[in-house]
Image (cartoon, rainbow, N blue to C red):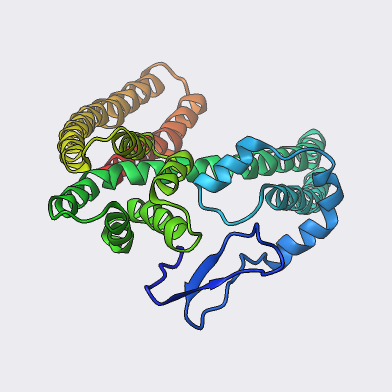
Length: 324
């Protein structure tokens, strides 16, 4: 998370270039840079020419910024290429070894299929998974912000009721780790004002552009609109706190109803239906003379269908419980 400078900050500025914006740091502190790992450095040296041959993807840059992944888009793309090559080499070796063992065992067609399909699917899957990782991380951050925005707005409205300045409100909100990603977003706004020397309205406007949460974007844009139009921020903060509290209660009620529906579905689909299915197939196997085929179906139901359905419901229930 960005450091929050104190009042005794000093300016670090290149005197030869008057256009450089001053960056204030704590007394005695030196500026640091985001460093790449050894693998990322090798990937950048190897695929630098290929990455720089075409213009950077603005969507990837936006997703990296919203995900707070401290790496440039071209460096990340080089890492994606390098990881895909490593996965391809590893899966070619693994596929050849598995295919050789299967062919030696007499399963020629399946061995050739594994040797060819494993590297292709693994490489393509790794490439698209890494390409979509920044968007996935940004989306996860957006959900976490939405979960914490209601109590965070209560904190903001309480600070505003005490006639605290807007920049100080965001600074204090960034220090409250209990609000999770909302505090992270507020800390970046405070970083822009105190470390980069940006005015508070511009910092809030920039924070709205890079926030992955639509609700937090609307809140920040409302702050800028209210301040620039001559309105008072204290009633706006109180109104947004009440609004997010109502929306949070409705969202919690919807999740509880969804969990109740999933519980009823679990009893019907996972408990009752497989039980009746096992009984019916067992009767057919005994009376109808299905023999080994019916026994294989029973093994498939008991060994695959029931565990997979149970784990599926457990995953959905766990996901809903994490959002509450």
